[in-house]
Length: 276
Ligand SMILES: C[S@@+](CC[C@H](N)C(=O)[O-])C[C@H]1O[C@@H](n2cnc3c(N)ncnc32)[C@H](O)[C@@H]1O
Image 1 (cartoon, protein in one colour):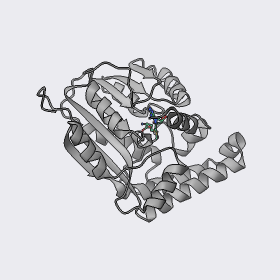
Image 2: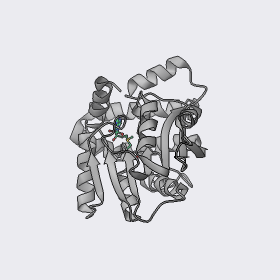
Image 3: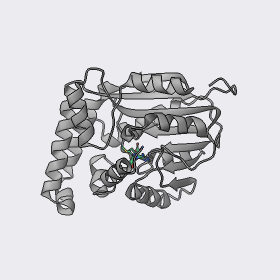
Image 4: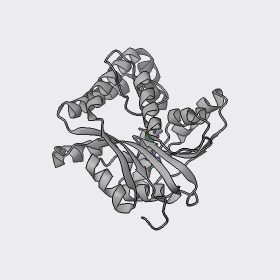
């Protein structure tokens, strides 16, 4: 991943972080799983973390977990609540600052935060029982490196639980290019992720297409932004607020056209040495 690409992500996530927090409904910057359309963003986003956690089958009580692209640390704090120790990796100093602040306010000290790219981790081989990541690796133009790093730092038999923003198979190339240019990301299809992970040596044990949740999630974000309009305008100005609303309308349009997708997976590192 080039330094220029990393800088673009940093600048995206280091800008107006309080408003970002408002629009995403709190400590989670990922999609929610809704039981009905009355639920709030934060309830549905919390359910995603719980459902992903339920995918793990072989986790020691005091597991060592690595959260790739940990953002404000919502999932990491949930995981410490389960008795695990979590290492957060994120390139955004602002998201890490909020993560540190929220974790300190909640008296959580089982979280270590590293400010580095998940394409080249400073961590030793075979260290983690679980690698966790939500809606973060879509920002990487080097997915192969991210999966290779996850595989390298997992212990044999370790599990990689992943949620990621994807594009659909039907998205036209020019629409995808524009979408990737608007945000610093490189969207791939759900199938691309599965094939890549398996080609590198992971076994795929779960793959769920959750794309039907996206439209409601973006409409909830739009509601949340409108509810916080006064605060956001006072803090960051009308032009910024209007840009956020236009951006969300664009994402909703992408959902309505069937161009966006959302995958959740569990990959397993084979437990027999050499099975990769
Ligand atoms: C949409 S947020 C998701 C945050 C968190 N996983 C969550 O679910 O709330 C994406 C996060 O990935 C981080 N990120 C993006 N590219 C990265 C990279 N190459 N290395 C490390 N972190 C990265 C961003 O800074 C941001 O905090």
